[in-house]
Length: 436
Ligand SMILES: [Zn+2]
Image (cartoon, rainbow, N blue to C red; front, side):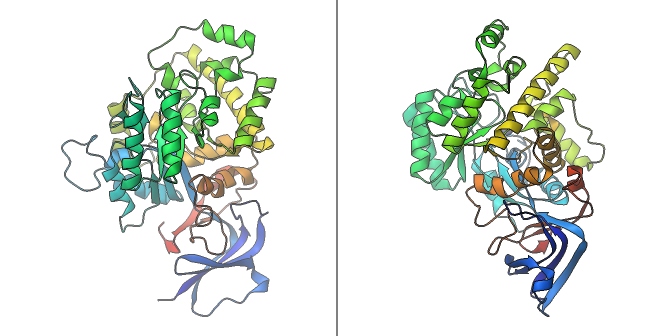
C-alpha cells in the first residue's frame, strides 16, 4: 500500500479564479493536496500511486449546493423503518457515482438523520446541513419544519441547533422580517450563516439581505424587480394557496436588463450575498418530470416516495408551461448578468424536489448556468470553489490548492468546450480515496 497519490492531468481545472493548468501534477498525502503545479517542474515521489489522467481533465469534486437528502434518512418519512440510514444509502452512492464529493443539505426533518449521515464511514460524499427549516406561521408544508410565531422561540431554536452542531440555519417563506432579523443576529453570534428561501410575497429578497441573510436559495428575487407596468400586471394575477413558497410568475413581467435589475445586482454585490438559483428544479417542473430510467430501482423508489410525501409534482397546463419558459428565460438572463457583474452564484439543484435526480441533478444545473451565460469554467467554479466558500470552507474544500482535501473528479472529455462532459466520469476521489 503506497502512501500518497500523484495525479497527472492533461488539463487541471482548479475550481478557483486561476486559469486551467496544462500537463499538471497534483500530489496528495493523508487525504490532502500537498503540491499543485506543472508536470515538468516536479518529480513524482517513488512512494506514491500514480493516477494517469494525462489524456484527461481533472476538476475538484462537485459540490451539490442545494439538496434535501436528510429527508430520506429521517423517520418522519419512514415511520416503519428501523435501520439507521433508511433509504439514504442508494442515493449517496448515486451522488458519489456522479462526481459529487460534498453535499449542502438545505433542510430535512430532524438533525439526528444529518448527524448519522455525517458520521458514516462509507465511501459517500461528506455532508453539511441546516437541520430543520425554521419558519413563521402557518409555515411551509414540508415534514419536520420548525414553525413558530414567537421571535423568542425562534432565537431559542437557533441556540439549540447551534449547540447540536448544525452547519448553517435555513429560514423559510412565511417568516416575518422582525423574526428574520433576530434569527440572523442569533445565528451570526454563533458563527452560523443564514440561508433563506424568501422573496415574492412576505419578505422580499432585498429585505432579507438588508437584515443580514447571507445566502438566497432559489431565484426568488421578485416583485422588487418589476417596473410599474409589470407590478400592476402581477398584482392582477389570482393569488394561490402556496404562492409564498412557489410563485415565479412575476418573472413574466421582469425586464432582466432593466434599471431595477441593475439596482438589485449592485445591492447583492455590495452585501456579498450568495445566490443559488436552483434552475434544475424549475427545468424539471417545466419538463413535467425527469427521466429516471437509468437510475437504480431503489433511487427511483426514493424519489417517488419523496414526491408522494411532499405532493411536489405540480401538473401544469401547456399554457402555463409556455409562460414558465418565458419566466425561465428572464431568470437565466438575470443570473447571467448578475454573474458578469460579480454576484456570487452557486450551483445547487434542489434534488429531489421536482423529482430532480440525486447526483445527475448538479450536472443539469451546471448546464443551465452555462445557458444563463456563464462560461463552462465559471459554471465549474460555481459548482466547486464558490459553493465551498458559501459553506465557509474555502480553505479546506472545493479547489485544487495546497492544504485542501483531495476531492478530485477525473473526466474523459473537455468540460471547458462542452459542459456536458462533466457527465463523462472516469474516477471520483474524496479525501484522496477513490469512491467511484
Ligand atoms: Zn430546497
